[in-house]
Amino acid sequence: MKSNHVKKSLIVSLWDGLFASAMVGLTTDYITPYALFLKATSRQIGFLSAAPNLVSSLFQLSSADLVERLKSRKKIIILFVFFHFLMLAPVILIPYLFKTQPVIYLIIFITLFTGFNSFAAPAWSSLMSEYIPYKMRGKYFGWRNKILGMVTITFTFIAGFILYYFRNNILKGFQIVFVLAMLARFISWYFLTKMYEPPLRISKESYFSLLDFIKRLKESNFARFVIFVSSLVFSVNIAAPFFSVFMLRDLKFNYLTYTILVSSVTITSIFTIDRWGRTADRIGNLRVLRFSSLFIASLPFWWIINQNPVYLLFIQIVSGFAWAGFNLCATNFIYDAVTPAKRTRCIAYFNVFSGTALCLGALSGGYLVNILPALFGYKILSLFLVASILRFSVVFFFSGKIKEVRPAEKINSRDLFYSVIGLKPILGVTQDSRQAVRKEE
Image (cartoon, rainbow, N blue to C red; front, side, top):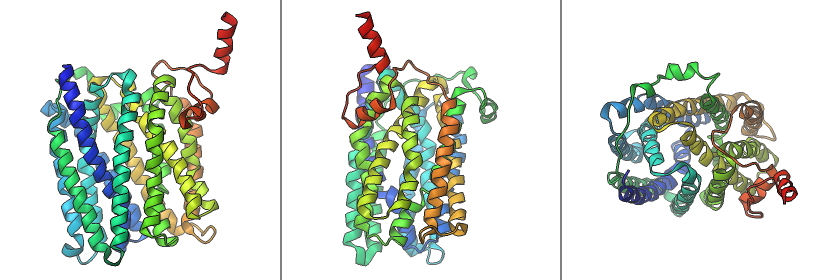
């Protein structure tokens, strides 16, 4: 791959990411509030999270096949990101076009919106992984995600302030937010058209069906990784769709307080993700996944103890710290574990499993939240307790069954924690190895 093409592609990819992140900031944390404005029930909120991810999973079953048929990842990216952009138009117009059952139509259009984007995701990930040498992926994607996170958080606040300003005409506020998101995605799509695509190497030996993948679940290290992440995603999304509901409907937080709380996760990610990346390049992605997943497992439990906004802000900071490391290293583990020829297909199958798990988790949460007994006056708190127990069960049962796929230095959990939060640099050796070095001297 020619270096000048790579440099140009990385530049336009960054611009794509900046505007795509603006769209994410304007939409991700405001779809559920929009649904609540349209009078969605708790069960409909569960479907709003579940349906898009189930359809996204089904879409991705054919993503790799279409890439191989067209012999181009870029064509897939450009086509489906354009469809993704278009789907925001009917979302904006729902209150005018569908006077009855508007939430049903919101679920339909958000499902298509998510599905089109996810169809392009494996091709984009495969293409980006070829630009960056594996030894630099943690550092590069940590830096990139930090920049994009700043954009996301900026536009999350912009959306929150718009909704707070138009609190007496909240529909107008949502329309302004989603129109801005639509414009940002269109500009993002334009930059995607400028990316360079290296020749796609396809061989019959690299093909394997989803059934072949499933048959290897017991013996494949990558397959065990997929099961671990998917199981955690299931347990996470039993509760995840309902944090917004709890804040806005039950705790009666205004949009400004809500925005501050949801934004604090991204802000924390910004300040820790590059540290996670540099750390993972040295100690391995799997070590970070195991460490961060323990924090993730505990998060719903802390919401049960106290619901003061200041206290919840601290919990959200912990959430941002943990998810920054987990999301970055889950992606990079796939890049390390899979050869380029199989990468698009493996990413697609990974997303099929995780997307299906997300769907089942959200549906289960939507069902359980109506039948669980109230805890401290709220049924949602009972749901949070169930979710936390399931998360810990997954982490302890599955994470130890996966092996690291690259050379990695050892570090204990205390030094890992201090290094990521900036209190102590990684020295690249454990206490035992430092003592060994002294003996040799």
